[in-house]
Length: 114
Length: 112
Image 1 (cartoon, rainbow over the protein chains, first blue to last red):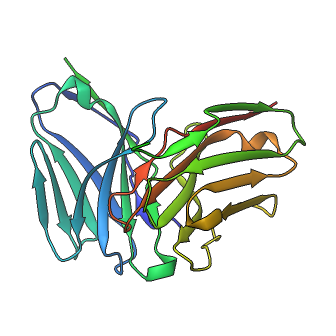
Image 2: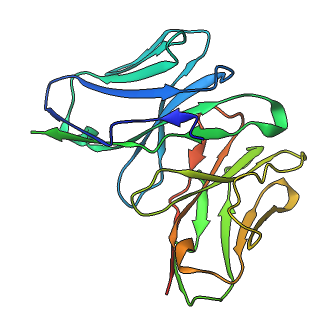
């Protein structure tokens, strides 16, 4: 049972345009949602997060939106740059002390065309 | 070091052999995770350590897999009697709290 779903395996956008990466989840008890970025042959790197009590978090070109009623979040990258080309993982966390763990989606490959 | 360190970076082993993968987390981080990524797949949770609590082993795929964390710091993931389906990149991550866990570069395991 996948609790975090990234239904689109890939996305291609033109440089300068907006990239919108989507993520859906099934567990309404998640406390935080995170996005990670991964380049080939490297470990994932933390990009941005949002608390479940917020609906928006912005950091430079990256904005994450959370719609709790729809159990949906999205990452917006504006403007997109070729260096943004990578695999993006959506992740969710429920803080229950000893049993907390990050649950990841399958990832989406973003290609930004020059 | 400043980041999460994993060793070896690459490991090729024969089917049936045991392997040990090592993770040095960021100093002071109480939470430590192991994940793996098989070819074309997402990040699969394996095991989670938090402080002195019993680890969450719910993601270990079989009893051939085990992990320990000594002194709340270094962790080793052991795979016994390796099989070809164990081939993957194994990532370790650590954090002070769940948010913003930092990943190592991974160990690429190839079972031939």
